[in-house]
Image: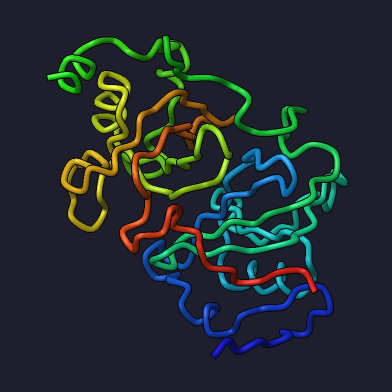
Length: 125
Length: 125
């Protein structure tokens, strides 16, 4: 049975059973989040979320992360305006990685590029 | 043997300057790798690579990773046959995350699903 819980959100419908399955321990309290453009499927960035960042994301419908370098929670675009509206969250088979499918406002990368993955390290000859 | 011959050849053209930029230190010798289907752009899995796994990937053209649980290098599909032919490798702005754009043989997930991200944790109402 799929149990649905609101989590105080009118924006996202959350599967609370799957929420319990998230393995935050493996990454010492953090899970990597792959951020993908909802429409083009382009991968925009990879960031990290702790439980609090995920909860804020699910409640607000806007992407929140945990900065490993600054050791703090942050909302994407809070200062730049380049917010990410989260339309769907996927979880992988072993529950240690998430995907946020988002509508990106402006650009995702601090370099001004739409995606952080704008450089090609290798390609087929 | 066809595969062996192909793996011995230089199938990928590598940007050696970008190769030097990869930040393996941040993740204690590992970088996360987002594995994306070349054609559909679907994210298939997230795994980890150390320098050796990346080198084997670039040399062979087939995805290799480092297993954090088994603490060993592995070639995706070596036993299952579900190999990933790497067509392109992207690197992010701060050099600590990679994308492998692949042609997936069979399925990516050990559950039998094509992608490891087959479950929806949350979706827009």
